[in-house]
Image 1 (tube, rainbow over the protein chains, first blue to last red):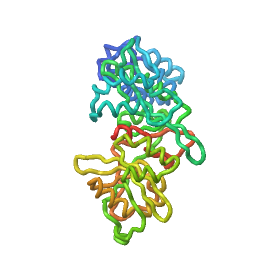
Image 2: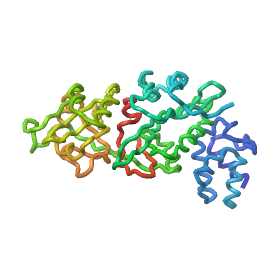
Image 3: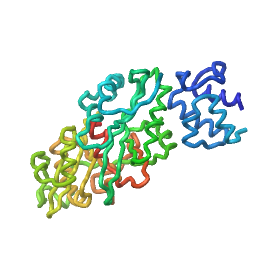
Length: 76
Length: 286
């Protein structure tokens, strides 16, 4: 799941996957703006076959938070 | 420390420099001021939200608050406007969006959602308010040429001011200082107050209608209205949001898709009950 998540994030933000880690978040990543966030969540939904609520949408602002949301949905 | 605060009328001076960064379209300060200092009474001081880095304003998301009586009920609205964040703070702009989405007790409208953000609004419960315009040529219908009109059409503000009563007069007063034009049609004892803007487009100048107080009378007198509007304002076309123009399309008109879809979120209202009267479209003359 980790590799897949980081790869989706890298593809969405247009950055090298090697620059991403567990600490990556909207706070510390300039390319992760609101439009990128929207595209990221939509990509995650498509890739993991899940649908996130508006609250989750807002909370998924870091790799750690995304991981928690995916786990809560039992994503593979 | 980056954080979000409620914007108030006093925030105007600190937000204004942000608008200078995003001069697209160029709008003078006195027009931006209207987003903060309303010409109508509003119990709430909120004018949206500001994103601040310490004391410095680095982002803004405006809300134009107003109330309207619709079907015998007071309905509360917030028209969303001017979501701007300095480029270096773009990754914090979602905080502004989150703050605006927390407004639960009002119908929210957005007339200028750019296509890339459209899915974001929809994710938070927004639906289409408008997707199409009816565009009319400024020609009288052939069976009701201008000379046969027994009623009266005026765009003279002094005359309109003396003839309007009640809430329609309030609308007139509230928007008089803006770029909006106003028209009053009187026919067979009934009145129709119309509020519109004139846009100088690249290919053609056109009038866009934002409010029609009596849609039945408007349609009945349309041939004369379109002619007078075109003549007075030198506009080649008249555009009306499709939801404000029920019924079959009249002669010399066609329906066309809006470049920017208007969106809304409401627990109580349908699209056709919501016009553009108090919105960024009229206050900023977009």
